[in-house]
Image 1 (cartoon, rainbow, N blue to C red):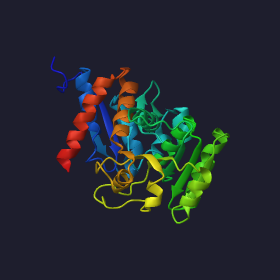
Image 2 (cartoon, rainbow, N blue to C red):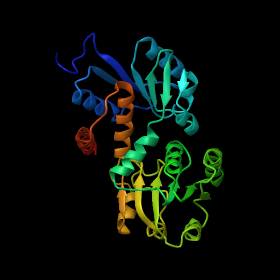
Image 3 (cartoon, rainbow, N blue to C red):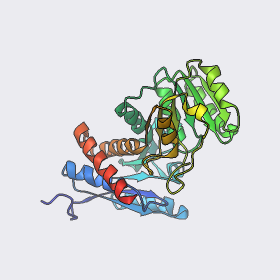
Length: 299
């Protein structure tokens, strides 16, 4: 039987969100299905806000094995699931739906995906000083990962301090020993960083959409004093390959990585949940190369 040829045995997977036209997930999951000779078809479905519940229930009725969920529905989709995995419940966002007997169960694979991406790049946040830029969307998953990995000091920087404080307050009851500070990007956050740690060694995670294509010249932070304190930085944006944020980190002589590996690993974890397969490192590396080549072709 020819693998990936659509026939009556093909099982459906998909992505729902709005927009979805430029998603790399169909390519990623197509490569995974080919690697493991599985009969899955992964499609991207643009879903209007008023049709979200219908889309989830319709996918279930049609027998879809699972779905990914992207912006702007990662929180709202939780209303239409039969169960939500506890960590996803805490994060307050679901990006993967797994078919169960009574309906879909929601998971958040962004958090473990980021954890695996950091490990891949040799970044250890355990016991480290970490500055998290942003307080919405994927920042929730990033903060949960930092707390799970027991970062020594976490500083959340956001355009509005109130939103950063709200994010910290949400997690603190679950991690009472954590040290989280917050500040707005209008404050003297450089002085705060030096107050927290005189060593001036920080890992930075950029979790906003600032600098994403096509606004590639933008960055949430311009001050070189900030970048001089960053020993390793990750921008969760992957298009463009090098954001201005990453460029400034590298200009200061430090290491910077984009978010493509997080995309890769969150997708792999979703695939493992759907299929029960354990994806080997060599397969992950092969697919990473395919995704990198695809992004270059789109540039």
